[in-house]
Amino acid sequence: MNVGENETAIYFLGNSQIGADVYIPLVQKELDERGYSDLRVYNIYRDSDNPVRRLSQIENIVESEPSLVIYGVSSWI
Image (cartoon, rainbow, N blue to C red; front, side, top):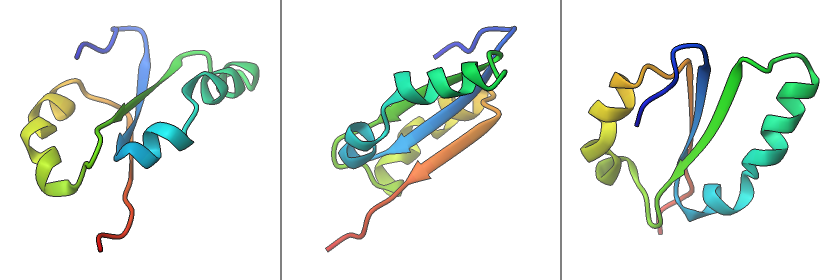
């Protein structure tokens, strides 16, 4: 994952619920319209994601230096 030099990245992480509920084009459009065109939003969800499974990708996420990470979790039953 490479984040461009001239952009500020926001990552949405989580399970398929995040994948379905966070519509990135709409979030990006709202940010652009409000004057935050330097922000880029990414939805990096995984089906059946949980913190333990996500550990395998944490180094890549950190190395890409996002400005904000939003991690949506749901209850485990």
